[in-house]
Length: 467
Ligand SMILES: Cc1cc2nc3c(=O)[nH]c(=O)nc-3n(C[C@H](O)[C@H](O)[C@H](O)COP(=O)(O)OP(=O)(O)OC[C@H]3O[C@@H](n4cnc5c(N)ncnc54)[C@H](O)[C@@H]3O)c2cc1C
Image (cartoon, rainbow, N blue to C red):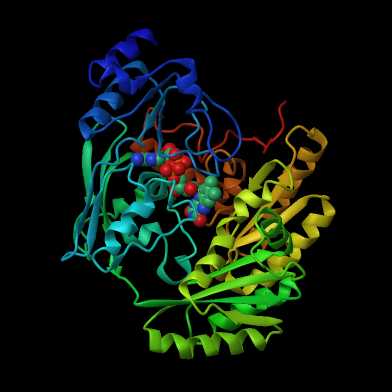
């Protein structure tokens, strides 16, 4: 390792090649489970430096683990086999908006919110808005194909990527796609890399599509006495002729946790609330909101309150942002799932989650991007209690089984990483996994790029306990 580190320092300044135990430990975790310290952390600031690191990794057979800000919820940036963590958080130097092309060109460490903020100055919008957008990088968003509340109307990260610069596992620099909205030259490698979780190539630059910013927004708070009614309201709104820009759900446990964390006047006796945002022309929004109101009332909504000012709307969305910090007060260990079901199956998934909560006697809360079926069942537990964690493991398996039974998917946006790898074949089948493994071998024959992610050795089980 000593000679590998010397070789790394021949292409990158020594202060950006970190080996002190305290430094490498700082890069040993993400927002999911497990602690895996790398041997060394490199903090590149150019494509040339990335190429140098990849060449050294090949010479010394060292794993390379790309990392943005470590907010991943599936174990993606963990150095499970040691090696080099490629920390992109310092490389936020390029953020160029081209208003006439409606594009943004960015380096991998730029925060996602900074892209939308820069676009706003030109009357434009970068729609993908993961709830972590103020702390997560575009590189991490691209690698996970991140979504967010606005995915309901505007889609997810992959829908806004025109081109990428990537460094391959053997150190070649390749450009995929380009600057144009349309491009059918050859295979669509851009879409293949987006969502590949750092296992096929390293992203060093992206050209993103921007769209005109809507002129206005309107937000409504809809209150329900049963969670199943809230599920029916989602279908009712989506078939009403109006497509909201956001439709987020919080169940009773979330509402109460947020109110306990910071009292905001949410209805603590409700079974669930939906936050619905419409965007577009201000005149159209008035009429569209009436239609949404009617759609919710027709399936038994208890009340609908429309925010009258931007401040009132901002307060409702602030409540949604508080869910993650608030629920960890229930119990300290949070297991975030994002199993996603077809929209028609949302009420059935709510019923299944209720059954799972009782069967495994767990603290389970539901929030998330309900409008696109991307529920976020979160289990709150205490990792120090092995008996409880065993029940949690079984509950997680049951959530995946139910999502697949309802024609859904293991993950709508958080990725497979280490956490869902043991379940990959349940959704894709053995042949589907085989095909993906062949693609991995073609792109990365020596298995250096983010090993231990997506594909688990046969027989691997989800274990959330120290064994
Ligand atoms: C409170 C909270 C809320 C969240 N809300 C959402 C949400 O609404 N929607 C959503 O989709 N996710 C959400 N997430 C998950 C997480 O923020 C996203 O997955 C995000 O895209 C990760 O970005 P990051 O910069 O932290 O990347 P990291 O966590 O550091 O890495 C994520 C993956 O990307 C790879 N990677 C990073 N940079 C590169 C690169 N340059 N080239 C190749 N691979 C790379 C890593 O190897 C890893 O596999 C949330 C997380 C938290 C903690």
